[in-house]
Image (tube, rainbow, N blue to C red; front, side, top):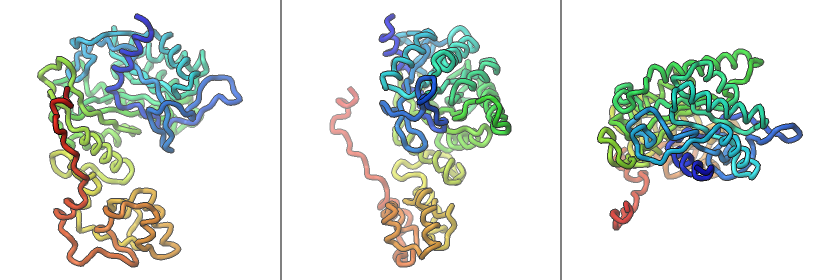
Length: 409
């Protein structure tokens, strides 16, 4: 098979893995040094760094052959899809050639399981090692970790890669056992734990050899099983606390041709995936807990974002006096983010906060109006009920398709 044909198959097969952001990678460059590549360049945009830069990653599978038969995966053993496999040298050549043409800034490499977990992991590690040692590649490398692989191979992967990811895929042990019988949640968590220990060792001894400086991440598929958002967020919260993950990524289940009856025939709303990302950001950055955002079983509301949903349920905290409240509570006001909460606290050291100040900070004035008090503003007496506020502040409904059958075709 020609290299271009392999690339078409294996790049398309990699699109279902969402965990390819490059956040947290250290700045490296080859200017004035031997070597190739950088983590700070610009190219075709596929991902975002913490400072907002768009970076491009060559996102491919080493192979879409797989000995596993995960029911939700298009590359499962029993799936009738075109198959292809790169050699180590071919992946290295593609990465090198794409970089020198300014198409990419780094590599995201995953793979189906072939022969054995150890063999597959050896191939992934060989790609990263050859790029670093032979080509002095200084760009970003993200390697998918095979949980069952020898811990020594995982340790070596962290030596060459910026980030490692171990995908848990589904939020409950029962779902993994039913839909991915060859996988073991205990083994997945052991791999996550071994990576965390290596990261902790590096943090304690800065002069130790580099190990995955951008940390580790994981992915959960949304809508492949009956797990609700309450379960998904509680699982994510546990993973963040236990393994210090940089990110949990959420991927809406995509029905695949000739899919088994064990998985749904229709995808979940894409907005559900978006709401989970918003809720996840509140967990990581705003100090919310999963119990606050989802105190009971069910899914996140689709018509309002999770922070607004929390504020509408917890009206006893509002309206909040921005001239007295602490920074963490100000950040919980709908329409005010972390950066503006900090700016408000800094500004009120000079003078009292007024309505116009919030407008200048480009806060979302419509959202915050019912929830704040300033020196010259407070909500009208007898503020509207949460039900009426929800109707007023809810996201606009989507226009329905006139001919959904044609859209589906």
